[in-house]
Length: 77
Image (tube, rainbow, N blue to C red; front, side, top):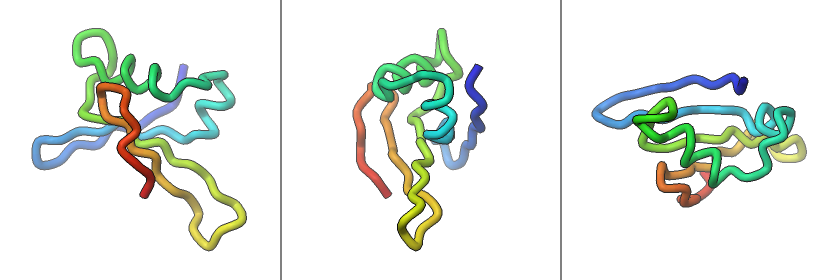
């Protein structure tokens, strides 16, 4: 089981999960994971997946990988 949080606002909802959680659970393919969990009929259901990517050697604590529900990486914030 993967620990996650789901946030919604203004008609959009996103599932938020730590990349470290995905690595610990042995989930290497973020595209497939995004498609499965964002499915509104068989998954949690969301417009997209936000993956918090820990970056230890930068001034930021983390970056965000945004995956659309149709398993496309939109970009990093």
